[in-house]
Amino acid sequence: MKNSREKSRLTLPISALALVMSSSALAQDINQTLISDVNIFNGIENKLYENLDVLIENNKVVEIASGIKPSEGATVIDGQGKTLMPGLTDAHVHLTLNDVPNVSIYEDTIFYSAALSVVGAKDMLLRGFTTVRDVGGPVGGIKRAIDSGKIPGPRVYPSNAFISQTSGHGDLATSKQYISPYFTGIPDKAALFGWSYIADGVPEVQKAAREVLRSGATQLKVMAGGGVSSYYDPLDTLQYTYEEMKAITTEAEHWGTYVAVHAYTDGAVKQAVEAGVKSIEHGPFLKEDTLKLMGEKGVWLSPQAFLFGMTPEQLNIVGTPSEPKMRMVNEKSEKMLTLAKKYNVKIAWGTDLFGPPEKQALQNMEFAARKKYFSDYEILKQATSDNAELFRLSGLRDPYQQEAKLGVVEVGAYADLLIIDGNPLKDVSLLGDPSKNIQMIMKDGVVYKNTLK
Image 1: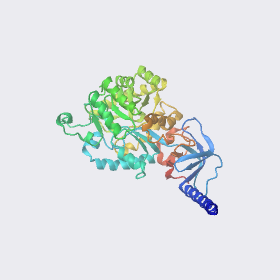
Image 2: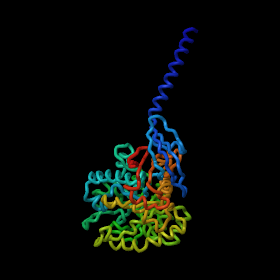
Image 3: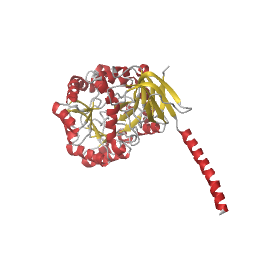
């Protein structure tokens, strides 16, 4: 009995010591940042919550209040009474398309494209974009490098390879001597490196959808109609039959996710919506009845107000097959955006500004371009909590929002935060000059820019 009691007395101090050591180690693992004296746009409400502090532990917001006292050793950032808001999101990017598609895919090496993508991802983050949905291209490696902390960049929801019919918008070879790999048995470079899968008929599109999902896509991107940048598919073409499109959406549903489609014409969009597509990219030729249907079904529209307004001269496509297509887009898109608002269609914030760095650098111009159709508040909400809602359609394929929310400033949300010099609820075009007006950029609790003085 004596030995047993002595053992108990010995065990208790050792256990207590272990608990103290464990608590000490845990405290050392918590990185605390306090952002003081800010006015908060929370991503949801049309107001600023004034004179507040935000406490961050590791990568999440843990407290929002006045007069928060940080722990010893915490990093303190004086917000100087400026506006704190969620990090920006973009629902339509192509991180691996650093030139026109035929150059990025067929002329540049995959290594050169990857190198430019690394630079582009960093630049995008420094424009304030902490999360993006990549809607086509072999972006999985870039996402992996960002998520593991190897390179700076936004969170990425990857679509990976486009799915397209033969002579569709994702059939990107431009050579007049092109011979289909279907007949030669020689893989096309676009398929070989994961840019685009050409599939025709129900069995082939089922196989393509499964291959893309296997590659780690969080959603599928399908070409449902003609496009501007592709040479061999007129804008008016309807691509894929209803049966083919339905087969693709069924595969996505089996994986708990959704399909986004490239579509310009009313017919292409209507067929896609009826087949179960949840996100329409572009849609400049949409008519009233189809927009009404989209509003009723809760289908998202991802338009590009800035790009739709760019002329062939500005895009340097005069004399190419893309020129007459772009002039049609310039003519039709304004009416569509007005009608979309009328029928309460869910509007995503996306840019589609792929290409060389000087073109990608125009990304933030989308804010001013949307002011013609939406209020400052509506635009801010689109670029934050609305896009985050769209991204959640990926369900269990969502790599981020299982753990915490994106696009909002609230307790428990990811610490993806910006500090703005000015009030974007009064003038959202402030965000068009990120180098000047976005003074702090934090993603996942890490500060990537701080020019506050």
